[in-house]
Length: 83
Image (cartoon, rainbow, N blue to C red; front, top):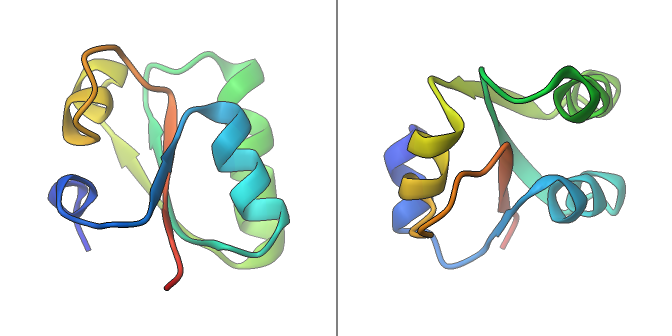
């Protein structure tokens, strides 16, 4: 899957809190993190993904990630949710 998949999937979450909840509840299938996200946001997500074996992809910027999610603001993290 690529970042383009974020714009077409039915089940996704956007933002740190929602992504973290999706990972912790076992619902996240793939997680995306913006390279320019602040470390206090990206590091906990990276650790959770590593601990739980979740696929993780880096995106060039928060602006690109937000646009790929179909929102008008920047996003630090996003996740595709399992069906």
